[in-house]
Image 1 (spheres, rainbow, N blue to C red):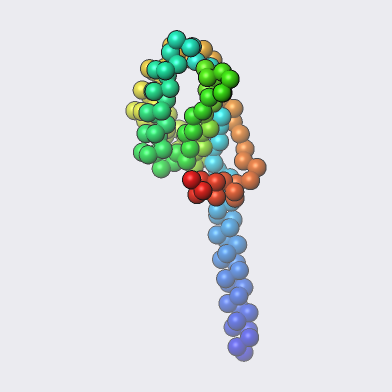
Image 2 (spheres, rainbow, N blue to C red):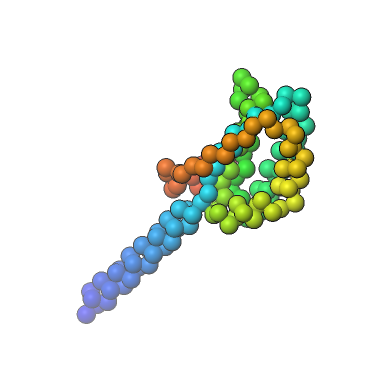
Length: 136
């Protein structure tokens, strides 16, 4: 009789663990990942970078749904900006667009941007992503 109880308990634990894994997969599958490719007018580069740094810092600090706003530039061409954007889900992204810091960034840099391309991405290895950020 004891072994039936142990077997039943093992089944329940395994089943619950599978449910947790499925829920985590759903959560990470809802993530929104984007790379923004931005070309900046060189006359505005220093000012643009200052405004972008403020916006990125505020987004990560104030918005729980913003996982990453990671700006960078090409070494050989600093007017070519790239931003790795990762949001918990599409709703977090939509909420981000309504924040005062994003609206300030968007309106104050409009004349500085020569081109903008938004490239939506899909993660290949979502399990490793959380480990990457823990290493910092």
